[in-house]
Image (cartoon, rainbow, N blue to C red; front, side):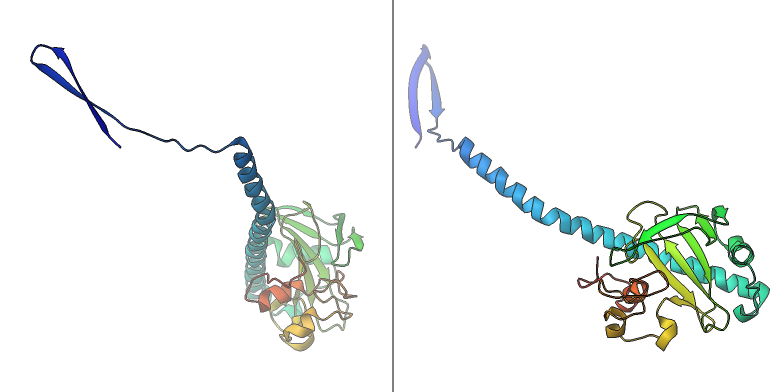
Length: 240
């Protein structure tokens, strides 16, 4: 409600003043603390999900990039040296030097890189005999030649962030294989592009399942296939 006051300042001079009756609302300290507590709880619940979703998208982007540049490298090598079945498989290191290094942005290549990783079951593995190409973006490329008579020409392991952790199959370490004139995600060589159940079923060929067994690099060797089958996306049922 407004009230008016009139008073005389000087002869024949009048001033009108206005005043307002305000009521200011304020939170108590207890209310502020409760509000901050609720905000903290919500943040604690949502932040891990947001971080995980970001990591998944980043992983897929790096995996697709690695897959693309390896496919291109294979195409260029075939143009220069002919079909993959006719390549020289006598020495793994020379194989990488001849058929891949010239077509990749390699900053380091080693004949025997010591590398350790875990599979989806948590079991540890290591090797010191696979030739390794380290790319300018930090990606590690491991070349593994298949045994003679095996239907696969060679496998390529890719760690999308090098030796930075977690070094885990299906998280930052993935596997590709060359079979029937194309570089493919790992499990395709067995049945063409398999159905999804075969990829996630806990079998003995390294499926993308924490209860799987076997696999070239252990359980989780199929995870690159699962990501591709799901439209280059890591779904909610992926063993992240």
